[in-house]
Length: 152
Image 1 (cartoon, rainbow, N blue to C red):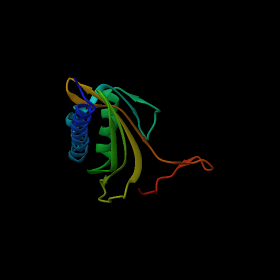
Image 2: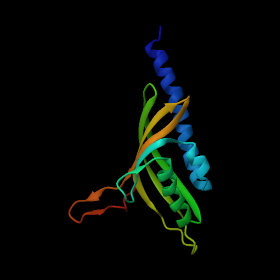
Image 3: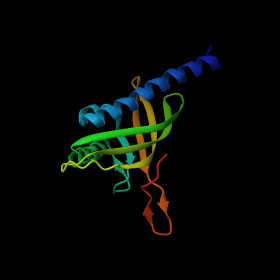
């Protein structure tokens, strides 16, 4: 018979694995490694990223986004703060603040901007994969522009 303690212990183990996957995401971005990134997402991932279109569906679209980042920056730095997950049986969701920045081809290193990121994870064949992510910035309703100078 499975007890509440057994369920909590499994959820704790799953959260450690999920956080490990997010650590791998950060490492793959810093290494500009598209193949390592491919291993972290479901093939049918749906991404609501900060750049158009409204939705990027499928692993090819998600990797295309990252490939554009790798062309834009000579070096990539990716930070995640305040990562929180809620873990269930085969699904999990989490949120954090993230900042992407790097060195431009001209040698300039802009500060980047902090964004809000939400992750939807699924456990597939024993591995936790990102099935959905959403990245956003707050909106100044009066101007219709994103607010990109906030810090967590």
